[in-house]
Image (cartoon, rainbow, N blue to C red):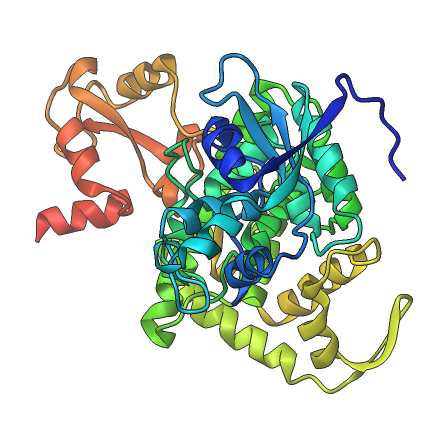
Length: 442
Protein backbone atom coordinates (compact mmCIF):
# COMPACT_ATOMS: atom_id res chain seq x y z
CA UNK A 1 0.00 0.00 0.00
CA UNK A 2 1.32 3.44 -0.99
CA UNK A 3 1.13 6.36 1.44
CA UNK A 4 1.72 9.90 0.25
CA UNK A 5 0.45 13.27 1.47
CA UNK A 6 -0.81 15.24 -1.54
CA UNK A 7 0.20 18.87 -1.91
CA UNK A 8 -3.39 19.94 -2.75
CA UNK A 9 -6.80 18.68 -1.71
CA UNK A 10 -10.00 18.21 -3.72
CA UNK A 11 -13.63 19.26 -3.86
CA UNK A 12 -16.78 17.59 -5.21
CA UNK A 13 -19.39 19.20 -7.45
CA UNK A 14 -22.78 17.81 -8.46
CA UNK A 15 -23.78 19.03 -11.91
CA UNK A 16 -25.73 18.01 -15.00
CA UNK A 17 -24.09 16.65 -18.15
CA UNK A 18 -25.14 19.81 -19.98
CA UNK A 19 -23.47 21.98 -17.33
CA UNK A 20 -20.39 19.76 -17.44
CA UNK A 21 -20.15 19.86 -21.25
CA UNK A 22 -20.61 23.64 -21.54
CA UNK A 23 -18.34 24.41 -18.58
CA UNK A 24 -15.61 22.17 -17.19
CA UNK A 25 -15.37 19.95 -20.25
CA UNK A 26 -14.40 22.84 -22.53
CA UNK A 27 -11.56 23.72 -20.16
CA UNK A 28 -10.33 20.13 -19.67
CA UNK A 29 -7.64 18.21 -21.55
CA UNK A 30 -9.43 14.85 -21.87
CA UNK A 31 -6.39 13.05 -23.30
CA UNK A 32 -3.37 14.25 -21.29
CA UNK A 33 -0.07 12.54 -21.93
CA UNK A 34 -0.42 10.05 -19.07
CA UNK A 35 -4.06 9.11 -19.72
CA UNK A 36 -4.98 5.61 -20.82
CA UNK A 37 -5.51 5.31 -24.58
CA UNK A 38 -8.98 4.90 -26.04
CA UNK A 39 -10.00 1.30 -25.47
CA UNK A 40 -10.68 -0.96 -28.41
CA UNK A 41 -13.02 -3.16 -26.35
CA UNK A 42 -16.20 -3.65 -28.36
CA UNK A 43 -19.20 -1.96 -26.73
CA UNK A 44 -17.30 0.36 -24.37
CA UNK A 45 -18.86 3.53 -25.81
CA UNK A 46 -22.28 1.92 -25.96
CA UNK A 47 -21.96 0.70 -22.38
CA UNK A 48 -21.12 4.13 -20.95
CA UNK A 49 -23.69 6.11 -22.95
CA UNK A 50 -26.28 3.34 -22.54
CA UNK A 51 -25.90 3.56 -18.74
CA UNK A 52 -26.64 7.29 -18.89
CA UNK A 53 -29.66 6.73 -21.11
CA UNK A 54 -30.93 4.11 -18.64
CA UNK A 55 -30.39 6.43 -15.69
CA UNK A 56 -27.61 4.33 -14.12
CA UNK A 57 -24.61 5.72 -12.23
CA UNK A 58 -21.39 5.97 -14.31
CA UNK A 59 -19.19 6.80 -11.34
CA UNK A 60 -17.26 9.89 -10.31
CA UNK A 61 -15.11 11.69 -12.90
CA UNK A 62 -11.85 13.19 -11.60
CA UNK A 63 -9.90 16.16 -12.99
CA UNK A 64 -7.06 18.30 -11.69
CA UNK A 65 -5.94 21.87 -12.22
CA UNK A 66 -3.22 22.20 -14.88
CA UNK A 67 -0.08 24.33 -14.46
CA UNK A 68 -0.67 27.92 -15.54
CA UNK A 69 1.31 27.58 -18.75
CA UNK A 70 -0.90 24.79 -20.07
CA UNK A 71 -3.46 25.22 -22.84
CA UNK A 72 -6.26 23.87 -20.62
CA UNK A 73 -7.28 24.95 -17.13
CA UNK A 74 -7.87 21.31 -16.10
CA UNK A 75 -6.71 17.87 -17.18
CA UNK A 76 -8.20 14.43 -16.80
CA UNK A 77 -6.97 12.24 -13.95
CA UNK A 78 -9.57 9.46 -14.10
CA UNK A 79 -12.62 8.89 -16.29
CA UNK A 80 -11.07 9.98 -19.59
CA UNK A 81 -13.13 7.52 -21.60
CA UNK A 82 -16.34 8.77 -20.02
CA UNK A 83 -15.46 12.40 -20.70
CA UNK A 84 -14.53 11.74 -24.32
CA UNK A 85 -17.58 9.59 -25.01
CA UNK A 86 -20.01 12.06 -23.42
CA UNK A 87 -18.55 14.86 -25.54
CA UNK A 88 -18.46 12.71 -28.70
CA UNK A 89 -22.00 11.45 -28.34
CA UNK A 90 -23.46 14.91 -27.72
CA UNK A 91 -21.58 16.09 -30.84
CA UNK A 92 -23.09 13.25 -32.93
CA UNK A 93 -19.73 11.52 -33.49
CA UNK A 94 -21.18 7.99 -33.08
CA UNK A 95 -24.59 6.29 -32.58
CA UNK A 96 -25.70 4.26 -29.57
CA UNK A 97 -28.49 1.71 -29.93
CA UNK A 98 -28.84 2.77 -33.53
CA UNK A 99 -29.39 6.46 -32.84
CA UNK A 100 -27.20 9.55 -32.80
CA UNK A 101 -27.85 12.11 -30.06
CA UNK A 102 -29.63 14.38 -32.55
CA UNK A 103 -32.05 11.53 -33.33
CA UNK A 104 -33.26 11.14 -29.74
CA UNK A 105 -36.70 12.42 -28.83
CA UNK A 106 -36.87 15.84 -27.21
CA UNK A 107 -37.73 14.15 -23.91
CA UNK A 108 -34.74 11.78 -24.08
CA UNK A 109 -32.40 14.64 -25.01
CA UNK A 110 -33.63 16.58 -21.99
CA UNK A 111 -33.15 13.59 -19.68
CA UNK A 112 -29.64 13.04 -21.04
CA UNK A 113 -28.63 16.66 -20.61
CA UNK A 114 -30.08 16.79 -17.08
CA UNK A 115 -28.38 13.56 -15.99
CA UNK A 116 -26.55 14.36 -12.74
CA UNK A 117 -22.90 13.41 -12.31
CA UNK A 118 -20.27 13.84 -9.59
CA UNK A 119 -17.08 15.71 -10.50
CA UNK A 120 -14.00 15.55 -8.24
CA UNK A 121 -11.58 18.46 -8.75
CA UNK A 122 -8.03 18.40 -7.38
CA UNK A 123 -5.65 21.32 -7.12
CA UNK A 124 -2.48 21.46 -9.32
CA UNK A 125 -0.77 18.15 -8.46
CA UNK A 126 2.66 17.08 -9.67
CA UNK A 127 2.89 14.39 -12.37
CA UNK A 128 3.86 11.82 -9.72
CA UNK A 129 0.92 12.81 -7.50
CA UNK A 130 -1.51 12.54 -10.43
CA UNK A 131 -0.15 9.08 -11.18
CA UNK A 132 -0.48 8.17 -7.49
CA UNK A 133 -4.14 9.27 -7.43
CA UNK A 134 -4.92 7.44 -10.67
CA UNK A 135 -3.32 4.19 -9.49
CA UNK A 136 -5.09 4.23 -6.14
CA UNK A 137 -8.45 5.01 -7.74
CA UNK A 138 -8.02 2.01 -10.03
CA UNK A 139 -6.89 -0.62 -7.56
CA UNK A 140 -10.08 -2.60 -8.17
CA UNK A 141 -10.42 -1.97 -11.89
CA UNK A 142 -8.69 -3.51 -14.87
CA UNK A 143 -5.61 -1.27 -15.12
CA UNK A 144 -2.47 -3.10 -16.18
CA UNK A 145 1.12 -2.41 -15.13
CA UNK A 146 2.07 -0.33 -18.18
CA UNK A 147 -1.07 1.80 -17.88
CA UNK A 148 -0.01 2.49 -14.29
CA UNK A 149 3.45 3.53 -15.50
CA UNK A 150 1.94 5.66 -18.24
CA UNK A 151 -0.07 7.52 -15.56
CA UNK A 152 3.17 9.11 -14.29
CA UNK A 153 2.48 11.59 -17.06
CA UNK A 154 4.80 14.22 -18.46
CA UNK A 155 8.19 12.97 -17.22
CA UNK A 156 11.29 12.44 -19.35
CA UNK A 157 11.57 8.65 -19.11
CA UNK A 158 7.84 8.08 -19.77
CA UNK A 159 7.99 10.47 -22.74
CA UNK A 160 11.08 8.76 -24.14
CA UNK A 161 9.23 5.44 -24.20
CA UNK A 162 5.77 6.53 -25.35
CA UNK A 163 7.16 8.88 -28.04
CA UNK A 164 9.04 5.95 -29.63
CA UNK A 165 5.86 3.88 -29.94
CA UNK A 166 2.95 6.18 -30.76
CA UNK A 167 1.95 9.64 -31.84
CA UNK A 168 0.84 11.50 -28.71
CA UNK A 169 -2.08 13.90 -29.05
CA UNK A 170 -0.92 17.52 -28.96
CA UNK A 171 2.79 16.66 -29.23
CA UNK A 172 3.13 15.72 -32.92
CA UNK A 173 6.12 13.52 -32.17
CA UNK A 174 7.31 11.07 -34.83
CA UNK A 175 7.39 7.47 -33.50
CA UNK A 176 10.14 5.07 -34.53
CA UNK A 177 9.47 3.52 -37.93
CA UNK A 178 9.32 0.05 -36.34
CA UNK A 179 5.91 1.01 -34.91
CA UNK A 180 4.45 2.35 -38.16
CA UNK A 181 0.76 1.54 -38.34
CA UNK A 182 -2.44 2.13 -40.23
CA UNK A 183 -5.25 1.88 -37.72
CA UNK A 184 -4.98 -1.38 -35.78
CA UNK A 185 -2.50 -2.96 -38.18
CA UNK A 186 1.26 -2.61 -37.81
CA UNK A 187 3.53 -2.83 -40.82
CA UNK A 188 6.55 -4.41 -39.17
CA UNK A 189 5.09 -6.11 -36.10
CA UNK A 190 2.73 -9.04 -35.74
CA UNK A 191 1.17 -7.64 -32.54
CA UNK A 192 -0.46 -4.32 -31.62
CA UNK A 193 -0.27 -1.74 -28.82
CA UNK A 194 -3.55 -2.69 -27.14
CA UNK A 195 -3.27 -1.95 -23.41
CA UNK A 196 0.18 -0.43 -24.16
CA UNK A 197 1.70 -3.83 -24.88
CA UNK A 198 4.36 -2.48 -27.24
CA UNK A 199 5.24 0.24 -24.74
CA UNK A 200 5.77 -2.39 -22.06
CA UNK A 201 8.36 -4.10 -24.28
CA UNK A 202 10.10 -0.78 -24.95
CA UNK A 203 10.05 -0.07 -21.20
CA UNK A 204 11.81 -3.40 -20.66
CA UNK A 205 14.36 -2.58 -23.40
CA UNK A 206 15.07 0.84 -21.86
CA UNK A 207 15.40 -0.65 -18.39
CA UNK A 208 17.94 -3.23 -19.62
CA UNK A 209 19.90 -0.56 -21.51
CA UNK A 210 20.16 1.35 -18.23
CA UNK A 211 21.67 -1.66 -16.42
CA UNK A 212 25.40 -2.43 -16.38
CA UNK A 213 24.57 -5.98 -17.49
CA UNK A 214 22.24 -5.78 -20.47
CA UNK A 215 21.12 -9.43 -20.64
CA UNK A 216 18.61 -10.06 -17.88
CA UNK A 217 15.08 -9.71 -16.67
CA UNK A 218 12.86 -6.84 -15.63
CA UNK A 219 9.95 -7.60 -13.31
CA UNK A 220 6.86 -5.42 -13.30
CA UNK A 221 7.89 -3.92 -9.95
CA UNK A 222 11.42 -3.19 -11.24
CA UNK A 223 10.04 -1.54 -14.39
CA UNK A 224 7.71 0.67 -12.33
CA UNK A 225 10.48 1.66 -9.91
CA UNK A 226 12.63 2.49 -12.96
CA UNK A 227 10.17 5.29 -13.83
CA UNK A 228 10.75 6.90 -10.45
CA UNK A 229 14.48 7.54 -11.05
CA UNK A 230 15.64 11.14 -11.35
CA UNK A 231 17.26 10.98 -14.80
CA UNK A 232 19.70 13.60 -16.06
CA UNK A 233 19.46 14.96 -19.59
CA UNK A 234 22.69 13.12 -20.45
CA UNK A 235 21.20 9.82 -19.27
CA UNK A 236 18.01 10.34 -21.27
CA UNK A 237 19.99 11.28 -24.41
CA UNK A 238 22.20 8.18 -24.03
CA UNK A 239 19.19 5.91 -23.53
CA UNK A 240 17.46 7.45 -26.53
CA UNK A 241 20.50 6.84 -28.75
CA UNK A 242 20.93 3.23 -27.61
CA UNK A 243 17.20 2.54 -27.83
CA UNK A 244 17.10 3.91 -31.37
CA UNK A 245 19.94 1.56 -32.38
CA UNK A 246 18.11 -1.45 -30.91
CA UNK A 247 14.76 -0.54 -32.49
CA UNK A 248 16.45 0.06 -35.86
CA UNK A 249 18.06 -3.39 -35.59
CA UNK A 250 14.64 -4.95 -34.95
CA UNK A 251 13.17 -2.94 -37.82
CA UNK A 252 15.80 -4.28 -40.24
CA UNK A 253 15.20 -7.80 -38.93
CA UNK A 254 11.47 -7.39 -39.58
CA UNK A 255 12.02 -6.05 -43.11
CA UNK A 256 14.14 -9.11 -43.91
CA UNK A 257 11.63 -11.44 -42.22
CA UNK A 258 8.68 -10.01 -44.17
CA UNK A 259 10.34 -10.73 -47.50
CA UNK A 260 9.96 -14.43 -46.78
CA UNK A 261 6.93 -14.58 -44.48
CA UNK A 262 4.89 -11.43 -45.41
CA UNK A 263 4.16 -10.86 -41.68
CA UNK A 264 5.91 -8.71 -39.10
CA UNK A 265 7.92 -9.96 -36.14
CA UNK A 266 6.04 -11.98 -33.54
CA UNK A 267 6.29 -11.03 -29.88
CA UNK A 268 8.67 -13.92 -29.22
CA UNK A 269 11.00 -13.06 -32.12
CA UNK A 270 10.83 -9.42 -31.03
CA UNK A 271 12.13 -10.30 -27.57
CA UNK A 272 14.64 -13.06 -28.45
CA UNK A 273 16.27 -10.89 -31.11
CA UNK A 274 16.59 -8.14 -28.50
CA UNK A 275 18.37 -10.67 -26.24
CA UNK A 276 20.91 -11.18 -29.04
CA UNK A 277 21.47 -7.43 -29.25
CA UNK A 278 21.94 -7.18 -25.47
CA UNK A 279 24.41 -10.10 -25.63
CA UNK A 280 26.50 -8.15 -28.14
CA UNK A 281 26.34 -5.02 -25.97
CA UNK A 282 27.64 -7.03 -23.01
CA UNK A 283 30.55 -8.44 -25.01
CA UNK A 284 31.56 -5.70 -27.49
CA UNK A 285 31.97 -1.97 -27.27
CA UNK A 286 30.96 -1.54 -30.91
CA UNK A 287 29.50 -4.03 -33.36
CA UNK A 288 27.31 -4.31 -36.45
CA UNK A 289 25.47 -6.89 -38.50
CA UNK A 290 27.96 -8.61 -40.78
CA UNK A 291 27.88 -7.02 -44.26
CA UNK A 292 24.55 -5.45 -43.20
CA UNK A 293 23.04 -8.72 -44.42
CA UNK A 294 19.85 -8.97 -42.37
CA UNK A 295 18.47 -11.55 -44.78
CA UNK A 296 21.30 -13.89 -43.80
CA UNK A 297 20.89 -12.99 -40.13
CA UNK A 298 17.20 -13.92 -40.11
CA UNK A 299 17.84 -17.12 -42.06
CA UNK A 300 20.51 -18.31 -39.60
CA UNK A 301 18.49 -17.13 -36.59
CA UNK A 302 15.29 -18.91 -37.66
CA UNK A 303 17.15 -22.13 -38.46
CA UNK A 304 18.87 -22.10 -35.05
CA UNK A 305 15.62 -21.14 -33.31
CA UNK A 306 13.81 -24.09 -34.91
CA UNK A 307 16.57 -26.53 -33.92
CA UNK A 308 16.24 -25.47 -30.28
CA UNK A 309 12.43 -25.79 -30.43
CA UNK A 310 12.83 -29.41 -31.56
CA UNK A 311 15.15 -30.46 -28.73
CA UNK A 312 13.52 -33.19 -26.66
CA UNK A 313 16.12 -33.60 -23.90
CA UNK A 314 14.61 -33.03 -20.44
CA UNK A 315 16.01 -30.09 -18.50
CA UNK A 316 17.33 -30.31 -14.94
CA UNK A 317 18.03 -26.77 -13.84
CA UNK A 318 18.02 -25.21 -10.37
CA UNK A 319 14.95 -23.15 -11.29
CA UNK A 320 13.13 -25.64 -13.57
CA UNK A 321 13.01 -29.32 -14.38
CA UNK A 322 10.96 -31.97 -16.11
CA UNK A 323 10.20 -30.13 -19.35
CA UNK A 324 11.98 -30.58 -22.65
CA UNK A 325 14.47 -27.93 -23.76
CA UNK A 326 12.16 -27.09 -26.65
CA UNK A 327 9.16 -26.52 -24.38
CA UNK A 328 11.12 -24.37 -21.94
CA UNK A 329 12.80 -22.38 -24.73
CA UNK A 330 9.42 -21.39 -26.17
CA UNK A 331 8.10 -20.38 -22.76
CA UNK A 332 11.02 -18.59 -21.10
CA UNK A 333 10.94 -15.24 -23.02
CA UNK A 334 7.31 -14.65 -22.08
CA UNK A 335 7.04 -13.08 -18.66
CA UNK A 336 8.10 -10.12 -16.54
CA UNK A 337 8.68 -11.71 -13.14
CA UNK A 338 11.26 -11.58 -10.39
CA UNK A 339 12.35 -15.12 -11.37
CA UNK A 340 12.84 -14.59 -15.10
CA UNK A 341 16.50 -13.47 -15.01
CA UNK A 342 17.85 -17.03 -15.21
CA UNK A 343 15.30 -17.86 -17.91
CA UNK A 344 16.37 -14.98 -20.16
CA UNK A 345 20.01 -16.02 -19.85
CA UNK A 346 19.20 -19.71 -20.41
CA UNK A 347 17.22 -18.82 -23.55
CA UNK A 348 20.38 -17.22 -24.96
CA UNK A 349 22.58 -20.16 -23.92
CA UNK A 350 20.41 -22.61 -25.84
CA UNK A 351 20.15 -20.33 -28.88
CA UNK A 352 23.89 -19.64 -29.06
CA UNK A 353 24.63 -23.37 -28.91
CA UNK A 354 22.96 -23.53 -32.33
CA UNK A 355 23.89 -20.12 -33.72
CA UNK A 356 27.46 -18.96 -34.39
CA UNK A 357 27.36 -15.31 -33.38
CA UNK A 358 30.39 -14.58 -35.61
CA UNK A 359 28.30 -15.52 -38.64
CA UNK A 360 25.91 -12.63 -38.08
CA UNK A 361 27.80 -9.92 -36.12
CA UNK A 362 31.26 -8.42 -36.36
CA UNK A 363 33.02 -6.53 -33.61
CA UNK A 364 34.21 -3.05 -34.54
CA UNK A 365 37.28 -1.29 -33.24
CA UNK A 366 36.33 1.33 -30.68
CA UNK A 367 38.70 3.68 -32.51
CA UNK A 368 37.54 4.50 -36.03
CA UNK A 369 39.71 7.33 -37.35
CA UNK A 370 43.42 8.18 -37.36
CA UNK A 371 45.12 11.23 -35.91
CA UNK A 372 46.68 13.86 -38.14
CA UNK A 373 50.13 12.84 -36.93
CA UNK A 374 49.52 9.19 -37.79
CA UNK A 375 48.49 10.20 -41.33
CA UNK A 376 51.54 12.44 -41.78
CA UNK A 377 53.79 9.64 -40.55
CA UNK A 378 52.22 7.24 -43.04
CA UNK A 379 52.73 9.72 -45.91
CA UNK A 380 56.39 9.99 -44.92
CA UNK A 381 56.63 6.18 -45.00
CA UNK A 382 55.06 6.27 -48.50
CA UNK A 383 57.49 8.99 -49.71
CA UNK A 384 54.48 11.32 -50.18
CA UNK A 385 52.98 9.10 -52.89
CA UNK A 386 49.42 7.78 -53.20
CA UNK A 387 49.55 4.11 -52.23
CA UNK A 388 47.21 3.16 -55.09
CA UNK A 389 48.46 5.27 -58.03
CA UNK A 390 52.04 5.97 -56.94
CA UNK A 391 51.73 9.63 -57.94
CA UNK A 392 53.16 12.44 -55.80
CA UNK A 393 50.60 13.92 -53.39
CA UNK A 394 50.27 16.49 -50.63
CA UNK A 395 48.56 15.86 -47.30
CA UNK A 396 45.47 17.87 -48.35
CA UNK A 397 44.93 15.58 -51.37
CA UNK A 398 44.72 12.36 -49.35
CA UNK A 399 42.62 10.40 -46.90
CA UNK A 400 43.42 7.48 -44.63
CA UNK A 401 42.07 4.24 -46.12
CA UNK A 402 41.67 1.07 -44.07
CA UNK A 403 43.15 -1.95 -45.84
CA UNK A 404 40.48 -4.19 -44.31
CA UNK A 405 37.45 -1.91 -44.08
CA UNK A 406 36.38 -0.73 -40.65
CA UNK A 407 32.80 -1.84 -41.37
CA UNK A 408 34.12 -5.33 -42.08
CA UNK A 409 35.88 -5.57 -38.74
CA UNK A 410 39.15 -3.94 -39.73
CA UNK A 411 41.07 -2.41 -36.82
CA UNK A 412 42.19 1.21 -36.79
CA UNK A 413 45.82 0.22 -36.23
CA UNK A 414 48.85 1.70 -37.96
CA UNK A 415 49.45 -1.43 -40.06
CA UNK A 416 45.85 -1.48 -41.37
CA UNK A 417 45.80 1.81 -43.27
CA UNK A 418 47.51 3.68 -46.08
CA UNK A 419 47.17 7.18 -47.51
CA UNK A 420 45.39 7.40 -50.87
CA UNK A 421 43.80 10.06 -53.04
CA UNK A 422 40.39 11.07 -51.69
CA UNK A 423 38.57 9.80 -54.79
CA UNK A 424 39.87 6.26 -54.36
CA UNK A 425 39.08 6.12 -50.65
CA UNK A 426 35.49 7.05 -51.37
CA UNK A 427 35.12 4.80 -54.42
CA UNK A 428 36.38 1.69 -52.64
CA UNK A 429 33.70 1.93 -49.93
CA UNK A 430 33.90 -1.21 -47.79
CA UNK A 431 36.02 -3.21 -50.25
CA UNK A 432 39.36 -4.58 -49.14
CA UNK A 433 41.98 -2.14 -50.45
CA UNK A 434 43.94 -4.81 -52.35
CA UNK A 435 40.72 -6.15 -53.95
CA UNK A 436 39.90 -2.60 -55.02
CA UNK A 437 43.36 -2.21 -56.59
CA UNK A 438 42.76 -5.44 -58.56
CA UNK A 439 39.51 -4.01 -59.97
CA UNK A 440 41.42 -0.95 -61.19
CA UNK A 441 43.89 -3.17 -63.07
CA UNK A 442 41.02 -4.93 -64.82
